[in-house]
Image (cartoon, rainbow, N blue to C red; front, side, top):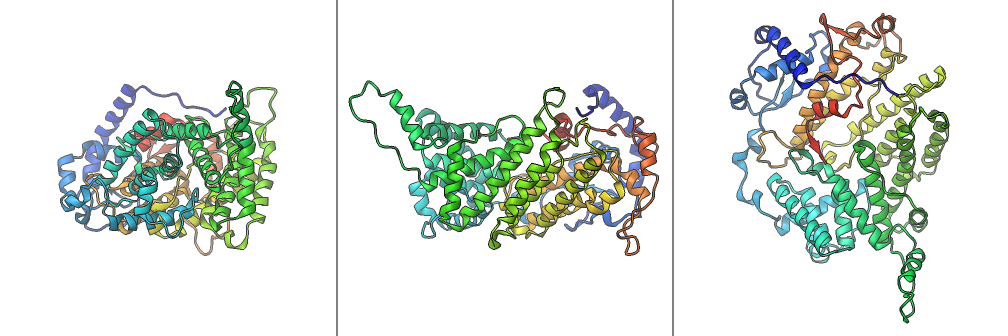
Length: 557
């Protein structure tokens, strides 16, 4: 089991923080520039090694002593530099004052609806759980499947007030049609799958949780429609309740391709969500779902079917990884989980080798593939299993390599397409045996965070959602959260970054001999020392959801 740090009480942590803030306020006021900046540029921190590092306590102290009225009055930009991270409202072009009555309409205009519908067609490439005929229009979809239409408009609307209105309308329709009226239709099911797949468009602090609720309701529709069982099994179960009837039982229904796609899409969405929520179980995989997967692969009715089939195959491996990582290793009758790793890697290699040429460079498949393979190599690393040292080290670097490849692909995606990406997962790890020099040259954590923050600000510029929220859009909020995460991690990584010079043309590919490993040996139980202060976050258990909620805020799904 992983070591956990004893949780301090809220009062003791507050007292400790206040005590440190009092000592730092005078220094901060003298050294930090309180002026605002006039542009949105973001200077990556990793490119300025000669400047001092900002500690987590500095940022907390600045936040605690800042005048909120003054902060809101100062510039309307959000940016981050090495010495300071200034958080303010939106740019004037997306401020509250620029919102018109059109932005507060309960539904988009017919012209806007067609544009949003076309956008959703492109988003489906990332997770094609349904096929939309080319001749289908937004108006026709609204007539045939009004709930699905509402969900699509909510996800793709460029107005936050309108998204809010549509989100509440969806919640009411779920209650009325699904709970009170007992509606079990493809309209409701496809709408919920779409809403779950792009749940990030409706997530954030203060929003009502919905992910577990809607996932459970979608599963209830699937069970009532019998989509997890073959029509023959469904008919057999029905006959048990109709033995009193003189009428012959109806012939088995023919499973449609639309039904096969949606059940696989729902399983994929729930499986990915379950991997990082940890509060619900994945929809059980059945023999009939296996049959649906084979039928879609064999028939290949549309090119998007091959994408869905491949992603489900990859996530089936990912689901096995999650089961292994949740297994209790202190039971003597269970084998160590790392012995299953070669078989899972072999399955992923088989999937990769069978990819047709047109899918070999599909970014959505590659993102899921490298994310899953990184998780496969992490099996057993966070436990006290007796893994051979050579196996452990190889797994560490393989895990890091695939995580780095994931980010390389992610950063290559145009900023305008980022909004249409489904969920991705975050995994953290810390082990004394890791060579910090090589890991930093392979996947520099702070650099990756810098690039992600910069990307989110760029997405906010090219995907200008109009909002009445002074905290900004989904993407600026995400950038601020990642920036806080970076400030929290920086003191832990600062000693390593001080000891190791940034790579140069002469040092590329060389391992720098430093005292890092010696320091690890000597201070394994003493904690890290940053600027002469024992850092309370040293050895922090990053799987602690209480700590994660402190960093990311009270985000509910």
